[in-house]
Length: 353
Ligand code: ATP
Ligand code: MG
Image (cartoon, rainbow, N blue to C red):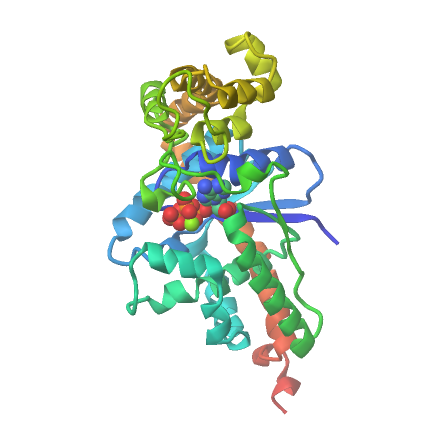
């Protein structure tokens, strides 16, 4: 069986550090590993409309922003198809049939959707499209016969739902669809990077993000404001590392060699944490270090993004070609699906007898 990757992002804003450590950084590694036969990255504009129907302009204008972020991070259009979800009508068709394989109560149990409903204050006014987006996400994954889906932890319930649909479909209509596997970062903090406020996961909807395209001064200012340990008031006070966003970010980003470069008084992160716990280490110092570590990673991405921004017709071509290639794959799968369901009436007159 072919090794196929599918992932994606909602074009509801530019991409942030949560996307980067949760999925994007790994996508680039996997892309360059030569282990995969096909890689698809979807800009999920139709899914973004499920909770932004009254603001289509936001979704439309962010398609290009997300594409620029991908390319700036090293997604290579020669190896990876970048596609726009709404331009693949087969996804709607597949979703329509999957809807019959999922119950309302099953959707109501999805913990990620539950949290998101609360976050958006939908209460009784949940759009049907939003409520059912895990089903359309199952279509996204399976239309391309993805075997591996590199995402953040919040996507685990979507993958479980997808596997259930695949099993149900194959049982009823015969072996057709491929079961996908979630692929999470091996570094636990990367699976769910918190926002700069330390309250919840970094998320475009919560305004607690550091964006990949933020200027150096903006990154420094956001790090300065970052939540640390409210009990760590005087320099001599012992500090907490757990729940301290600066340390969580260091867990996600810093490598031992960064100490030699930017903070040679310590050999590694464990030593720095020990000192902070003991007391005598101020927040300013750890924040300066984090800013340097982030800047090292973000500066080249920012520069590439600025270059790419000068050639938008190229980005447009990348999207157009990626979407066309994805559509070809999608059409083939959909033919198989129709055949399995025996609704390919006009291909075979005997199917009507
Ligand atoms: P929105 O608020 O519009 O839902 P978002 O910031 O949650 O936006 P998505 O487009 O929903 O971003 O998520 C895209 C991908 O990035 C998913 O694979 C998701 O798991 C991952 N991701 C998003 N936020 C984080 C985070 N804070 N930590 C790790 N992974 C994340
Ligand atoms: Mg999200």
